[in-house]
Length: 297
Image (cartoon, rainbow, N blue to C red; front, side, top):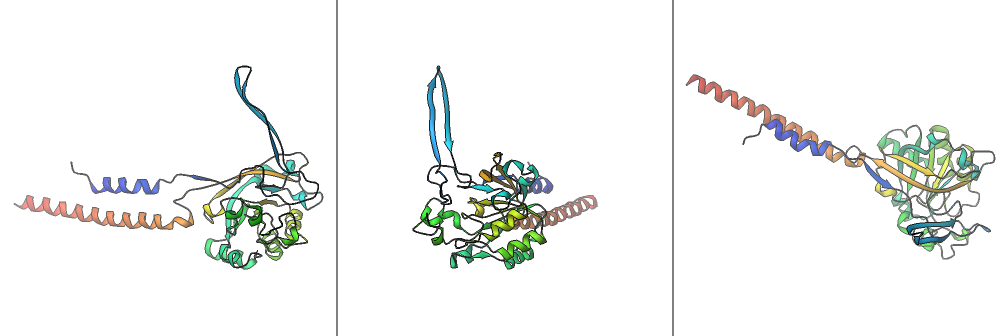
């Protein structure tokens, strides 16, 4: 059986141009031993099994747990560092979804564990990927996610109960001031324990974010598994009445074939289309020429 070149072309290109939406979990499991800021008087996470077995001839599981608001992957409501601003239950739902913007500072953070994202990092991002979109959820990717399972590594200190010894990346207050006054964003997040870098004592980034009604995200997981642009982030923030924050399930979605990190795929599509187009024209002309020759004979 002979196949027309157009049929072959379609069969080759369809798998390439048919993107499948990918979903990436940006949350760490909420569990005992997860990193939490060492505030005095705040209880540790505790999980107690109520029942895990047969009850009234039916399998039933139920538990109860106690958790600090600001532990593991979590969000900071603006009220966390700004009096009179939104508490957890007051955050508008439209602020919990937005275009993903990932600021990659892995090389800088590797050299300097106290690195702070600067305005020049935002400038570089916009030169390469365009203006930070309206309502964006901006995440810092410092490569710190590989440290999360070890408290000493995530706080980069042998004394994880002493904030004065902490060393990890965050945002510079000047960069955040520019971002909040020059662009319209919904959230700012990090893959470290705090929006402010580890040695901060005034938590100026927290204050700026809160005063401007922006939600913070901390201990975000898998920031290296999503494209720096072109994705969408969803934040499942617990609607805790009067809360200053709480645990969050954060998801990112994107189409691998249209993300900036997969431009090679589209080059293949374009080149393949051109080659099959040339082949189709040549094949058509050759068949016309042969038909003309047979007609002459």
